Image (cartoon, rainbow, N blue to C red; front, side, top):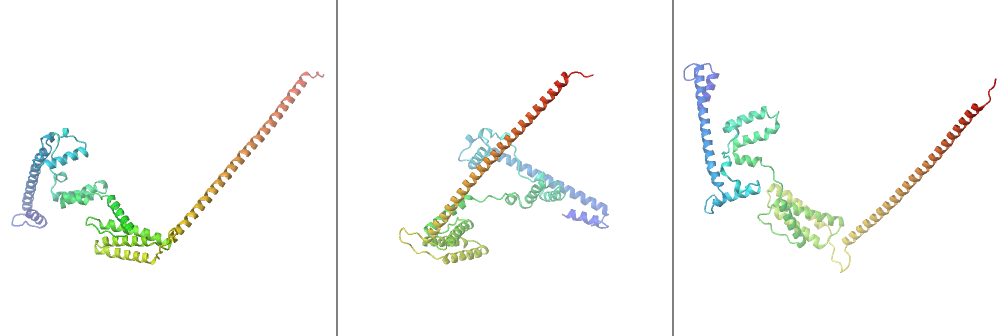
Length: 355
């Protein structure tokens, strides 16, 4: 750093620092700086070569033939995991584990650059080559992250977004269904995802609320089940951060008020239909009538279509008959004209000559 600052000062100022001419001091500073950079690069290259040797020793030990590995070896568990990954993901059998067929390199930055060099080079490439080849921008950005924050953090920041775990939603749906059917809110477990469980429970409660609101009345079991769902969702919403928990609790309270506003139907005598059942039966009857009307209309349209096709066929046959008659008339007329011409020609041939 001192050589760099001295070289910059001697280049910018009219005279050299600490005596001597500007040109001499600048050349000395640049030579010293180049020598130190060369020494640092050589030191780093030697360090990477040492890491390559160490990685070769480690991997050779891990890739030892499986029968030679023993459980008392410290690397036994790592070797078993590598063996499983190679066989299941890459289809490499133990017979192909010959260590001499592998190449061992320690992880390093692209081009074996230093961290400062990698940041400078990749930043320049993003500005010059990036507009022409946008496909290399993710690689250059990842190299800058590796040089700045390290490999572990760079991998975490550039990893693809994982798909939501469907098993969590399925488990939350099963628990919410059990809560609704039993009418008893379950206690949230520490490993339950509050976002998933609160969302599933509130959506299920909202669906049942729409059903009873459209019917205008609800049974005691439905009201108890919906309130149990809301209570279960609230127990998970309370586990969320305050900025998310507050609007979530307000929404659940509004849904609870809506449930309480729907009148509850008292138990009917055995065998009697409830109001909701009556409404459902009426809706079913209307649907059946509509389906019957649609079927009758389809049959009617089918008959009309058949009649139209028959009429078109009849008209076609009639037109063909007329065309046949016209053609027959034309042929008869043609035959008559031909006979007349032949008769006239014969008369002219046998007529007596006149002087």
